[in-house]
Image 1: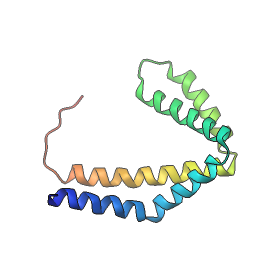
Image 2: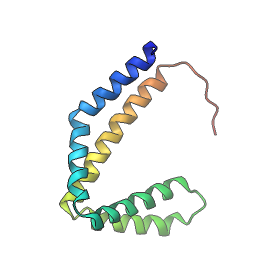
Image 3: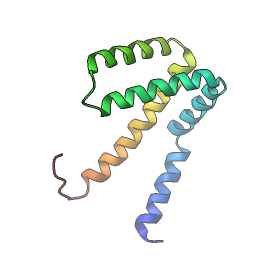
Image 4: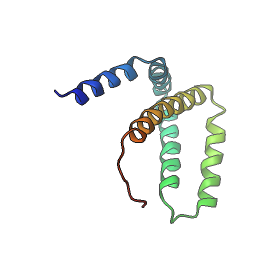
Length: 111
């Protein structure tokens, strides 16, 4: 195993041991105790992801539907805690990625 692979494993372990990740796993476990609610949350997350990725759709109608579903889901404390913890771990991972990408001099063409 080379140095980069070793440090990558160390970083992965540090993330898994972090309070942010442990909180996410705890909230995920709580939500999974209600499979129907978890399925509803996953449908919302899928719709939200698809809306952000697909520029060809009618975003006003879809955005309204997604926003309405989020508003309803956020009224449920377990869902709210889960989505907050998911956002926190995603932001932490984004910071790691931005730091790595920003620290390497590589030219990436615009898409």
